Image (cartoon, rainbow, N blue to C red; front, side, top):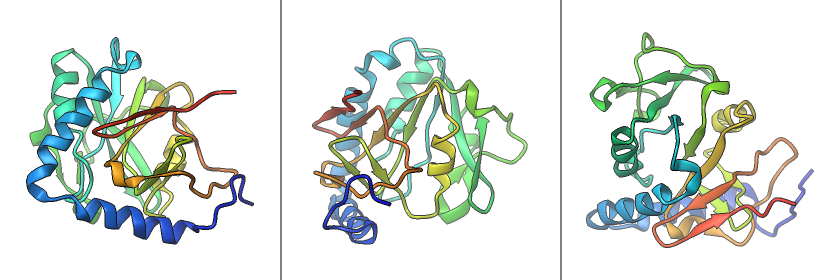
Length: 195
């Protein structure tokens, strides 16, 4: 049952979000990633971060790499997800991005033998998505990988990273969907207004 009914269903918004991601010119992507990183790193929740979950971006996704580099300089432990079995992500500490290897859907991920970490150990989770709304809801690719993972990150500050064109006034949500604490784009920082 939808908590926020919306005229656009998830599939329509996925299409619109993907179209927006694809529409970003390749030569603009590095500057937009840097602008988003600056906003992300300005969040007070990241000021004293210890363990941060990040992601290896696909060609279409906004790349968190500029933010990851600064977080490493600040001494943060960097964790990447790995597809451990269909529908499930395991979390692994990665000391250097050269350790990543092509995984599911051509997304770089840690090797199976990389040190594992429990979701309870994550302080901040920087997550991708296809579409987000101004209430900090997210829609992923539809596989449920991040939905399941986000539900286990009880104490983590959860922030989505996106291009501006991926932000919509509302997205349909279901009971099991986890609302993020914030969404950051190259030009906006949107915070979830907690009741």
